Amino acid sequence: MTALEPADQFNQRAEIIREHNAARIREVLDALQPYVLGYHGGPINPAHVRAYLEALGQLGKLWRVFDKPEPVEAGPDETAERVELAARQQAVLNHLAEIEAKKTKKT
Figure 1 (cartoon, rainbow, N blue to C red):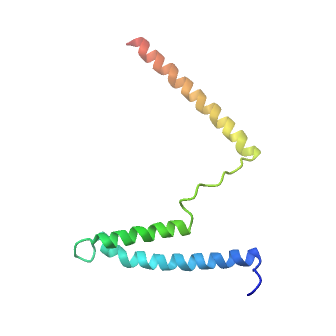
Figure 2: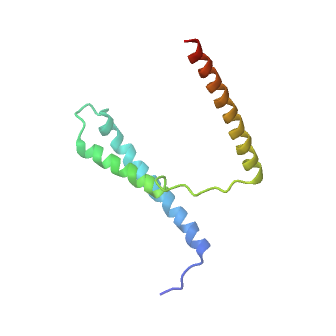
Figure 3: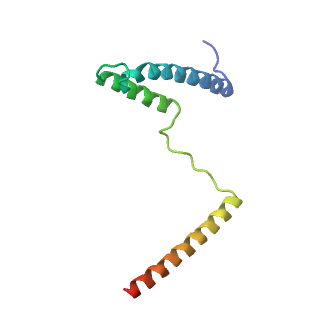
């Protein structure tokens, strides 16, 4: 047995393996695509569609597209921009409410 590798080496190798596996899944998707879209001239086979969708799911899991995004902390500039945007939005909503009130008064 060998000692565990440092985390940075493991992460670097994990990225290489992820890219390799993603390339293989892309090959499977490319091979199945004509059968899923009916380009081969015959009827669409549900088994091909299932395999295609499973490969898409695996690719998504590999790249973690289904994971909940990590919260991003807003810096001071972003916070000020959000406050200003909220104020502008409220002003627009107030103006729309005034227009709606005038519209209902006329009718």
